[in-house]
Length: 474
Image (cartoon, rainbow, N blue to C red):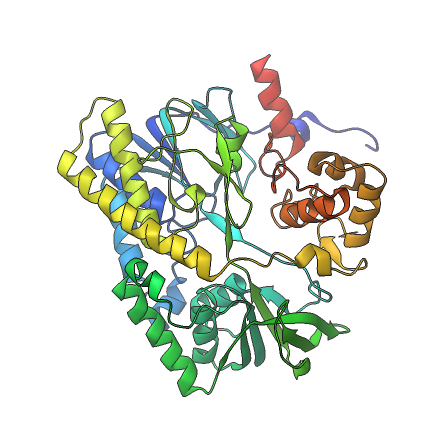
């Protein structure tokens, strides 16, 4: 009947509550290593993962037909997942964490298939939520065919499909190298690889932080690119993407302060990547102390050397603690697990912990080197034309942000309310740092944070789930 709803359509489906000694949020390299160490230490572990498979972005696994045809993508990840399941970890896949109670002991969850609401209660929580790709807008970046580097890599490695036949790869970071090589492997022609910075030159002051295994890995990528006559053009960037129904050409030129000619490249796909931003919404929502990272401006939890936050029983591991790569993520996950084992009276091997801390320090030095070699662009806001979309979810342009800031909305969160930037499905993950930069540009002072406040719900969920959870708390 029009204007009416039935009890069946408004009722919230409830999933059974889960009790555990430790909840691990995120089943990437950090979460898997943490869960395995905890389970082997005798604790009950609930491993919560939004995707249908364990492994995260790095240890993604091909579907059965693709695996049969092309083999396991990363066998070490498959072995790790197998060990986690064999250890008795309660793996809650396709389960989204969208909130928590004030002390963090109870996590609010939703089944991504059925929207069934649930709760996970634990004595300690390790947040291993990973990271998401950092985007930088430019004219034409919303055209079909303009994708992130991670999406292009996923298509090439998981489905063996090139994102296009004539592709430009651009941005900054070592991640661009495997992306370009993966595209070549599946038959794409890489017209250019544009690196914003100048990282590929000898720096004597950096030799102490270089890890030989990573040098060998990078050399392999560079040799592959050389065999396909793909030259890395350092100090170059995408100025604009052009096309009607999809991207057809890319305008490229020198980065700010650089020298070089502006030229057009004909393409049918453009892959852009500017590194990653840590996914820290859950610990920030719970109120742990944070610090602002340089040079990206991300708000990171303040941690001790084992991943403990300022909130008792809450730990952060992996890329959510700061971008450092897959090897550091695994070490950080295991360190956090040993800290939890000590806290809950299960004991831990001092020798193992000491070895992990030494390895973590070495990997952190390498991560710091990467941050120096591949800083994100600092001039995006200044160079953006007013008509360029900044918040794709809500269609908000740079000009709208500037006009709002000029009229007095000179705070990041006030800007969100004034323009709706950051209110879409991504919850500001893609645009918050650009909105902050534009706001700071107009106000003459930088914003205190490049991230919008983390609030319940952390991710979009049906309204009935949030209402039901609120009702149960009353």
